[in-house]
Image 1 (cartoon, one colour):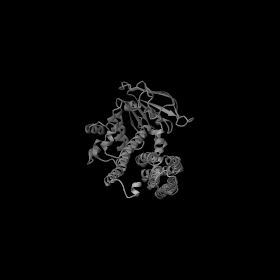
Image 2 (cartoon, rainbow, N blue to C red):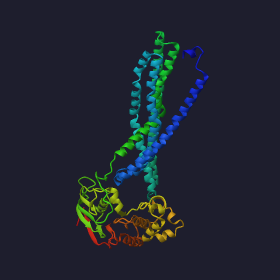
Image 3 (cartoon, rainbow, N blue to C red):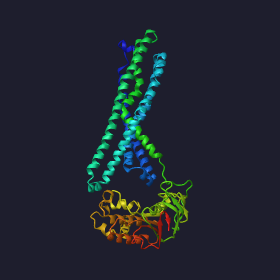
Length: 504
């Protein structure tokens, strides 16, 4: 620096090389950050979706779908941006003060380095202070954003109902209020960002430069350093603020990202209600498909039992109907057999194997379900059939459709198996959707079949076709039929009545 003051300096080639190196670094940092952000986004989203699938039905009842969708989309994007463009550079920038102090101590003045070192602890304290001060703001923003997503999804899924009830304007007002709430929280975060920039640029920067200038002049007056070293000391001291500059530049990303990271961590902290027991062993192929309920007790809410000391057996190949009034626990019994729930007491067995001692995947491989509500994924008929048997051929699909009495309908469609079913299967009638579910059952070819009110939402003409298809599907299989409609249970070998949580 002293050479520069007298008109001398390093070779031009060295300056050009340093400029090129700085340019490469300036290009590499955002490029590598973007790549890391994309990789992190894939990892986080895969983890969120996988965990939600593992949580299953219980989580679906605890959390609104829109909130989970918001976490898996916008939340993941913000968390990835936080990790990719904020955390890494922030950690790197925290090393800058140490490097600056080392350079000052070795090339300028160790005493000046010690004085500057005394002010360094204020930097991480300021960083932590900014984060703590605005944590609640970022959390409220994420909560309002998730609520808005949930309400939008509710409105979209219930569009037909809203129209029939003339409630569109009221829902629109609700969505507008939720959107305004999000806007207010965003503006608070942006205001916080401006406060941080103001504090960093005015208070900290001014204090650092003033202090460094006073220190340099004092050491220069003492003869400890030269004029060039004094100037270098002032210029280098400005780099001590690099961590705070980084916070000011990316505060909005940082705060939104931190809230999203906490949100994702809370989701991952949720544990599924049904998991494989330690030491669960796959018993291999099911050779005897008998079902046994022994002294089963279950309650969704403590002290309010749904099932009490329920015991019954279904022999291999037998069709047993479970009937009773709504709320008597019929569907709960079916869910216990599917391992969607675990009993509070007693034992459910399949083929002599206690369901708590075998892998959940083994149970679900051997149990097929036709429920009262058939969910169809957006896609084609083929896509929805292959959910049950990914390796099935077109011939297998056509055979399953024929067994379900749906092949003629599909053949009459111009695109056949490639016909789109629409959002949630809206292009199909209720009866066609149920028969598609039955076709899935044929493709899965499981030895145990649970029929949970499979005809409760169809007309009489569709009911006859569905019952005939169910008779074909149940042939040679162990069947638990859950229903309150006489036509559905007409083919049962035995009928059990479930009342107030007990078998009568």
